[in-house]
Image (cartoon, helix red, strand yellow):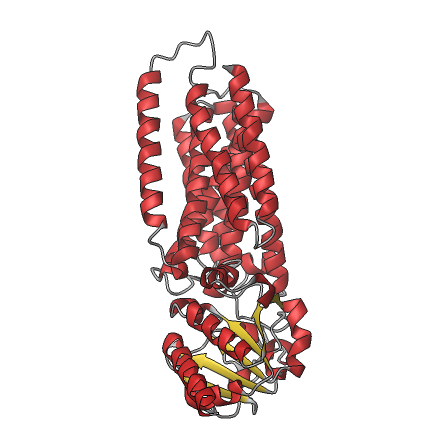
Length: 467
């Protein structure tokens, strides 16, 4: 039995690492996810065998525990299978936040049980169990707040006076209770105090963070969940948990730092400051918005030789990714060089736009990142922005008073002609005016993205038919 369990752990470790390697390329990401999923299935089923793998230990509650575990596995798998197939792509960030939170909650629950049942495991393992419990609790409550913000349950950041002082006191109580644990365990009251204040700290530190920073928060919670799982894997002496947690924690941490860098902000600035408060006066946007019909915009695009398409969250909200790809193919048929420009923090979570375009069947070679595409905008005839806002705002380059000053953006304003498809005249996720929209070379096409793109397609077909 021991050999079988070790073999399962080894197979799981290989599948997780190899699956992650394949996820590094869009062409192989799907198979990488499947391989990693198979690895998790193996170790999950093997965990039931673990109940029979330890000899000489009396476990009178084993039948009940196995029954409860089986029920939990059945309900969890059924709910995830049913719900996962029905979640629209626009709600994927919320689902990811919830899954992050559930992983953190599971790690915190393991920590609580180990601290109550096996408080004499030694100072090192005890310390790691406490750390895993704190990080897991932080991830759980923080992820729930992130979910509520993305779902619209908490539409505004909560920023009362002296919040940071209150957060410090909450953290101090959590640390003090953790410090007292080695001498006082098993003590259910102390353990309850520790987890209550750990959960409170995760919620309180996430509440003030604005919606524009939610992608970074989700990535951070993902990293925290991985670290918590890795810690609890060490406590349980479970290699698969240690490897999976370490891989997730490392990948999530790296992604969090890369995203913060893409916004030209430090992680500390995101967590401990109010986004949008720069201490400098923001330059007022002058000029008029210049609307144009979808048909007139399509006429210009029909004769363009080079077109760059810039998708944003508005494209996902309108479910218009298929229409945009149809437009791209039509323009290619007319001889245009067409590419999709992707900003690292476009959408509401890392890779949101990449997944959106992959769902529509856009070839990977047409999707270009910020660093590679920015040099091409000055030679581009038409740049079409669909539902993006802050990531194309030139104020990030020119206005030192802007909250997004210094953030790398797509240099859409340098194209010869810019068209922006937008539902209305509202501000972006960061809540600031966009200087691009009033630029001399920019025209606004108002309406639902799917309808507007459909009108553009029809107009191009009619123009071609009249030749």
